[in-house]
Length: 495
Image (cartoon, rainbow, N blue to C red):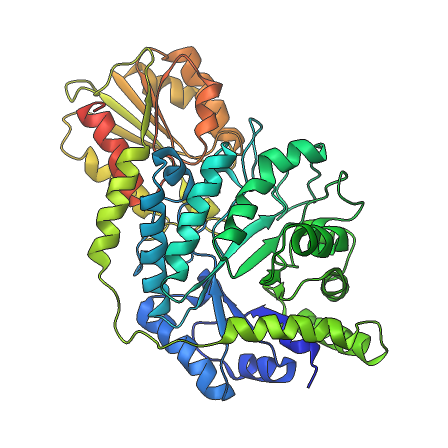
């Protein structure tokens, strides 16, 4: 039976199978569930959630999660938290990328999660990209292609589906699609050479799914990729020969909602050739989207043959393999994290010397991460990175710890006095390109203490370009393994 509801994957509320969630999935006949941080407490609870929903529905579901490592983190605890693509890109090891994929796959499958919405294959340019950044393997298309293919083969070897994103590539975007619609102005030959290469490699590697981007590419179409039949059907399937499932990105994002409702976006994305329509929030809009597609099918706007193709691809994703009854060996993941983090670390020499001397009165400036928990998830919780830094310097004879706000401002006079009393300053900068108070502190340190300040660029390696004369430590990440590698360079010196 043809039912457009099978094309939907919904985000849900809660950490347990709620009656209203079960009712929604039954009414919609949705094929999949997107698990977000709000659904996850720990591995055992997550496994109970995935199994419980299927038991109450009496049928299988495809559970997916954005488990990229690095910036995008849904599990604060319980699973291995990998440094992410930027660190892998710095390391440049196909073997390490494949090992990460295998470990991720084994851990996710044990929880009943059989799809990872990763890897990100967007190739960065020299311009700041607020929506991608550390999520990318870097600016080398060949390296991104190699590492992406290795990661895909690793995760799919564990029976977990990979999803390459964000097709046809949004590494050159300068706006965040979560907020507004980016436009990428490139020629087709330049785009082909610099951005499509990793997706071609992913298809050759047997990736199960591809996710499109909420980006406008005038050299391809006058419509964003999400709604472009030229891109979804003509380019991806026709020219590139992809036969797997095509996902939309979340249809609740700002780039979509600028001029479309969620149901209208779902219908238009379906007509363009998408197989899975992803709606992360709002049960009312989720129901309306299903109703609109069903109405479109009933009146002939959405052809039965078109729906049958997508339903067949969805059913292939739902094909089950024997489940793992045990959680995997997490010690392997921890060792791999440390190896990647140490290999990725980069130190840029400047006026201040490394290691920082314990004899100096030390000023440590650290971002107040409590204000950004709605946007970012941190391994162990928002205060865990700060606790790590405080412990690292707890035995130092003279030290002062100051939180730098990510909103509001940090009083310049307070900073001036703190710097004046310090023999060495360590500034852990989260993302100065995004947060104005951090940028202001960086500019003040350039003026007040360039010769005694070490910058540790946690989330954006490009922040060091705001103070190129200063010593900088760049760990390409801010989770535990990356922080440990950065602290080793700061306290013990570069290797």
